[in-house]
Length: 188
Image (cartoon, rainbow, N blue to C red; front, side, top):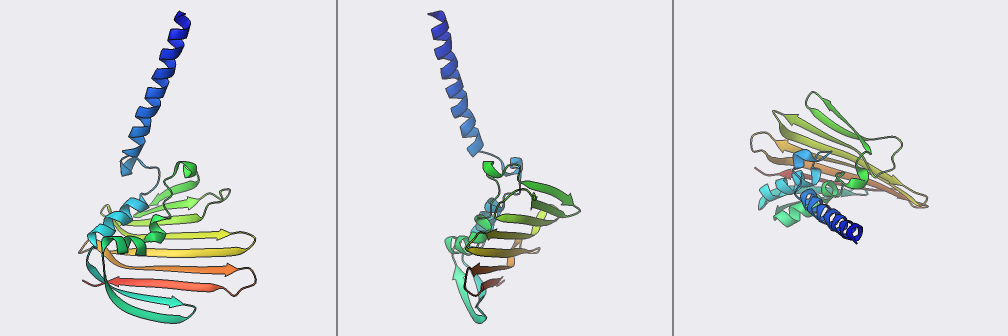
């Protein structure tokens, strides 16, 4: 009977520890993440840009369009969706990237034996402040290939996003490649 009580106590203890440790994971400090917190960074920058005016240029299959708009935080988050969707701080990706620090550059590069969409993230710093974020991603299967290059540059004086570009090329089996480029310049 004593063994059965010890077993129950041990099981309850393990369950409590599991629940407690799960709560700690959700409160993780971005500095404790294995990779740069691109999703958190973009969310923070989108909040700073709430109500800012931007000159948006798009090119779809060579046809260009240009307009000026004032964007809310949610519209900025939608515009920067490529960056937030490229977050590599997931438990399934924990040891998929090589991290290097060179002078003022932080680089997360996908290991050759890994097969993930995000291939590389580069973060440039000056005086511990992000000055640019660049990402490269690509996917390939039997029916299509897609590649994306996204860049976001900061204004050192305002500490806000200055300009950005996102270019994606898709090739679907039997069809011509489709190229889309979106560029934005935030008005001061």
